[in-house]
Length: 339
Image 1: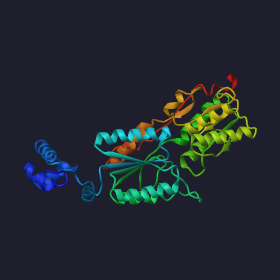
Image 2: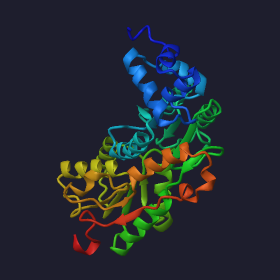
Image 3: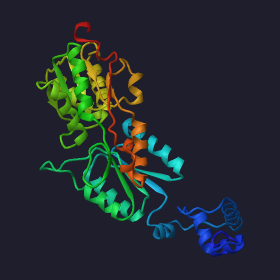
Image 4: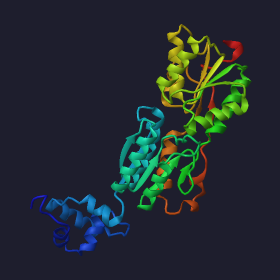
């Protein structure tokens, strides 16, 4: 029989089971089918060349077997590391992952979330930094996420919480404050903060945490990317700035800043100390290795999907535990007296 001709009813008849049993065996129902019948249905489906109608399944169940990850920039190892954790849990649950990068554009993020409503994903993980509008309120993406949940999907945010949605808390402000204190203890008192865009919550929280400890640090906003770090640092140096230390609110910004220093004839870690945040895999291999605040990025991604899929997350307190950053001092900040 050709693949196009095979129907679920024909598979059920071939296997000698009811239509409902065949549907549960093939369509991922939460109601279990015993192993013997399950294997018989699968064998009949293979023999007849049956292909499930995914759209019909989505209508019947309210969701598909897909998990949608929405990130700012997949080329950024921060987001790819988080995505790896989501994918690991999805594989364990037999779910398929789709990924969309928004370029940290609020309008594009909102449009992506609107499109996802019609695709009926099982879960949506938002890993992009939440944004503030012109009056300092969260952007419209929150409303889109709530609409997705009302449509039957589960949503989990990474980072800043939003009322009515599940979130994986990350202690960005506290981690930056701990790093600032470690740098002060190493003798750095002339620090510039490469702060990222002022409307990004993650960037804002990290800059604020650093300023909690070093309130007189110069704050310079820039793009939340490697190129943003490069351009901001290059402009600072061109204007005559020569701080003792630079703290970039992401590792990729710190790497860009280090490149700008080299292009200006300076040696990172010797002429100007550098620190970042996230501990992406690359930072241990650059020269000098980068001081940073380490986050368990893959574990954060895994927790986000576990939280989204949990029937009652309140029943498992571990799902609500915040992720703490760990300060790791490396060669890029040898100490003000040892440069």
